[in-house]
Image (cartoon, rainbow, N blue to C red; front, side, top):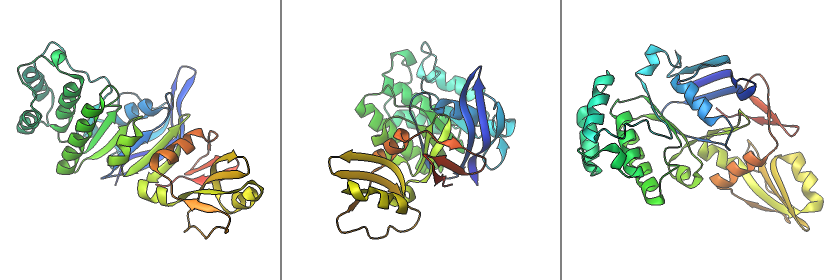
Length: 305
């Protein structure tokens, strides 16, 4: 089952296209890192998934075929935005009481036990909590609904490193216990590297790279060798990024087959997740065509799903 599936999805705000021709499939049971620069369309895509906005064109379904934002989907999807919509003047206990009355699916025991384990005082006003505690309260409200899909938009953007680490650890504990599918957007790649097993790189409103993290890392290599022989390597592999230092050239390449041995005067190294993401974000913007293929800088790049 795909928890998110879009076909030629578009969203326009007046004269600005936030998403254009976005075709995407995200399988269930994954922790998905949604990465991209500011203005790439990440928040728009997340708002479309949870039904806060409607597509301008195209189709988007969640949880195996339900229309995003439909009554059938709303009770099964939880959303934690960057600015958690908590009432600062309410106590934590009153916040839980409000959530209990507003949600048909609500596990009060889970919410109470989770906040107790985090040592968050129920009698304290939400506005007096630290940023990390407020983020944990927002996450608790989402998890207590027992969602099948949890969507988070930059949930740790304003947290210090310790609070960010604690939030991510708490998130993964809840996900493991509940078996929830997660789509998480963040600029903090080091945190994503610890938890994500599926990657979506979004740029200029279109997916540039999609797939299982381990598979994608296995398909990419950094080749270093003489500048004079760079053209020969470009003929053999799909070059994502090229950089040059004097007589040496560095080519980040992609291959869908096992990497063949390189020439003796070339070196081949594996790449990390951050290096891979930055390479695709710096590459020339892709032109999206119908179907699951993107053409970038004149070479075909298959979008893995």
